[in-house]
Length: 378
Ligand SMILES: Nc1ncnc2c1ncn2[C@@H]1O[C@H](COP(=O)(O)OP(=O)(O)O)[C@@H](O)[C@H]1O
Ligand SMILES: [Mg+2]
View 1 (cartoon, protein in one colour):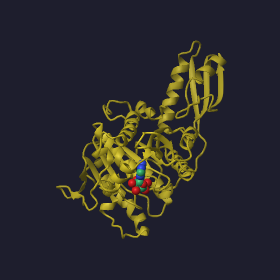
View 2 (cartoon, rainbow, N blue to C red):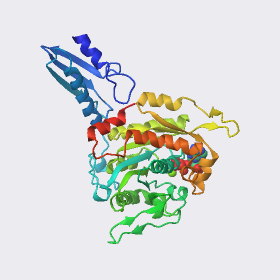
View 3 (tube, rainbow, N blue to C red):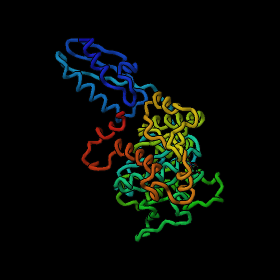
View 4 (cartoon, rainbow, N blue to C red):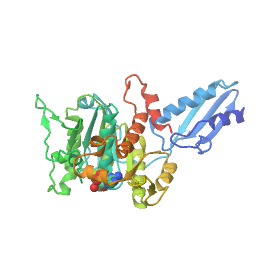
């Protein structure tokens, strides 16, 4: 009986990893007495929602085994250092506390907030955010993008609306977003000009983010893509906690330095129980325009290594490419202006991976639990 139960537990994967509950050492204790099975699992690093789904899965599987009368699952989680938002001077948007606030009214019709984040600036986070939003739109979703990168809000430039100003709703109570290529767009760049000193930007960002999320007439959206500020410091952590984010996409380049920061990003989202949808490896390879040959640029396999270690899959590899670069710098994003190009195809692959993990159709019908645990399927 003991061996049978162990084998059953060995058939359940640890969320986000290729190993099983047994192989990953998550199984701490197994007691069987008179058909009563007690399982103690250490699920450190697994977001709460996925933990519950897993508990249910274990109970269901073991209960079906002959001779099992009752199944008790005890979950232990090692303490992670807690970020104390209440004591963060000036940046606490919702008055502190680690609990994730419920979506506000303006976001009521926004089904999913997808954060695009990177540990390091300059890795192509905005390029990925813009083209991901456009690719999800091309797949039929209603999409908005909000740029809260205080250090370099480049979404307006990338979408060809650098000088635009958001409108004001009829009741004068809300901003109406700018429209570009069929996306609803808001950017901190619409409100803060290039000359605003960076020391002002930190305090500004807390109130602006609140406005962008609460006081913008987004209307009905399937996805709102958030271009986050780079980094993994307290400001990013506060932002992550202040919005009801469905999941995060982490952008990195294969360089060793960027990867170290990507790991910090993964850890930051773990800390606040936000699922990581996947890792995007940007500027990962070069495709020869003459012969179509793919060459790795540097550090081949680096992203795969951290993906394995942290249980987040690499969901897209985007080549380094002049069309991608020019499209962004001239406000003509490749996914919108050349939708049939191989460059756009790379972003469509990314969009499909996100849509697979966070579907936009029939969301209301999907049970929340099954829905979130879907994020951890590999
Ligand atoms: N896949 C790519 N191929 C070529 N250039 C890229 C690619 N991704 C980003 N870039 C370029 O790199 C620079 C930084 O990209 P950006 O998206 O602004 O990065 P971040 O938002 O992370 O600071 C931009 O000039 C952009 O056009
Ligand atoms: Mg940027």
